[in-house]
Every structure is written in C-alpha cells, then in structure tokens.
Image 1: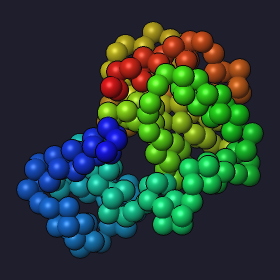
Image 2: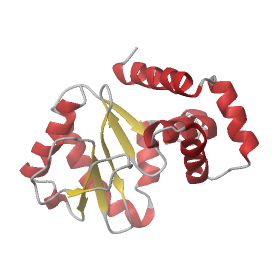
Image 3: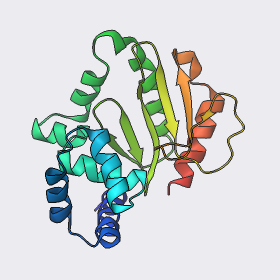
Length: 191
C-alpha cells in the first residue's frame, strides 16, 4: 500500500475515532442533513462533529464521491484524461505551467498524484501541494508548508484552508528557481 493511501486510511480511522461514528453512519448523517453542496456539507461536518477543515473536506469528498480521483475511476478515465478536462477550453494556455512544475517535481522523488475536479493534489505521507487553474487567466500553486516562507512569490493564506501559501502564475516564466526551491521544501516536509 502506498504511503498516501495509508495516510488516507489513517485519517478516516481518526475521523471515526473523533466522531464516535463509523464511516457508514457519517455518510447516513450527511444524507439525512439535507445538505447537498460540498461547502455546505463540509461546514456542517465542522459544526456538527467539531472536525477540522481537512477532515471535513475529505469526509465530504468520500460521501459525495466527488473528488476527481473517484470520478475518474467511475468513468475509467486516466489521470491524463482528468488533466485534459481541467485544462480544456479557455484554460488550455495554463497547461504548460502545470507541465513545467510537474517536470521539476518528478526530480524530487516519489509522490502520489490525486486529481480533483479542478486541480491536482500532490501527496507523500501528507499533501504538499495543490496546482491548477484558479481562473481562465490565472494558475495557482498552493503549498502546505508550516515554515515561514520568505519568498515574495508566495502569499500567505488565512488559517483554515487546505494550504498555507499560494503562488499565482500567469506564464511558464513564473516557474523559476525560487518557486521550485520553495516547492521542494514543501515536498520534503511532507514526508
């Protein structure tokens, strides 16, 4: 079993322990809540079961089978198919930024790619980066890095989100040595 898969199983077991409910019971509670949108369910789980953002988000994806990985499996799609969908139409010009970042990350070592609906999550023992188009004109690299990032390329994100820092990008030239070095720190910190 891969380290990221084991980490997910550990997270789900911890959610069961925190809530005192099985995953089946939690899914039933979500269905009974009447909430149907991802954000509503996530916020309801946080309020009802005192879960943190990450745990509530993971549980919401599990209940809705809404993450890109689950959707891709249901359609027998590959990661490449999901990427083609993410970077379709007006976002196609942002794909080279993704490809340049991934080429650099491949040199760091092993990690797991978890495609979501509109972005890609990268994990080792835990998630270290999220990347994808934020708008039709802007790409965003999010990092999970507890250290203080001195780079002016990365902006701190308010607490409670999935990443501590983001770097907005609009061209391949934005993927410079500073971005790669900071990304490598996040990769190493994840495990």
